Length: 183
Ligand SMILES: [Fe+2]
Image (cartoon, rainbow, N blue to C red; front, top):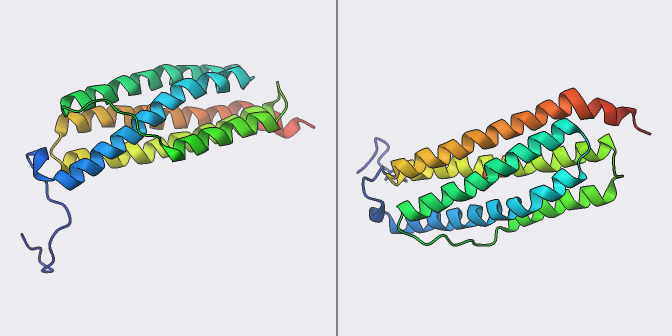
């Protein structure tokens, strides 16, 4: 199929996923990557909850931890729908982002709003990574004709966006000002 400009379109919507093996492989690879990242977050978020002081921040991260456990389950449903085993492939980006969060906790004082600000900064970087990933994967699932998979990914994408907005609210209404008053 040629476009008006005469060039081949990069992607075509397929009704069968198997019609695009290389792209499907890339898609699966990315799923394994975010599966590792979500599992990693299930272990990393409790440390952030432990380190946070603001009640609103503790609540926001605690709620997102529960959502994150749901994101792991959703990815397992997706692997299942695709007839693939749920395999986690180490995500270097998430490992780095999570190390950065731990570094912020180590370099700030316990019980301070400044530490809370740092936790929010690190957490929002994580959210934005996830938003980018789920946004891209949702589109890719549609391209591959995997409509049910796309719907599941979109549900997680919506929760990541909301989590990011809630963190912004906590920063704006609760901790940023308090931190600016700290010595
Ligand atoms: Fe998530």
